[in-house]
Image (cartoon, rainbow, N blue to C red; front, side):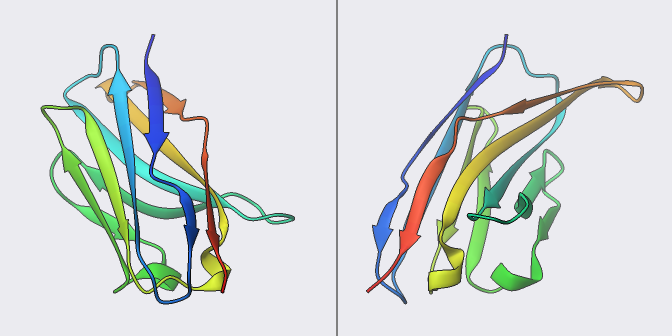
Length: 120
């Protein structure tokens, strides 16, 4: 069973920075993607950033140039460096893992979420 444990959320001032971490335990197939999603009160969960094992990345337009996703494959970890934080970045941030045995067989896992609050 794969588990994802997040850390690093908290309170930041506008313009400040936070770094989120996510570490996976359990068996993960070689082809996988780790991502960060967020959900603000009253809104749907949205993709923030994703990174494949190939190194390709995908970012939401709202965070491009401010957030950076990175991974440590050996540690089965993903990180989200958040700079230039804005109040609208306030949300619960979730780590997501999609891992594929083959083209037809994939599994998806979620972390428990970590609160990020941006306020002065």
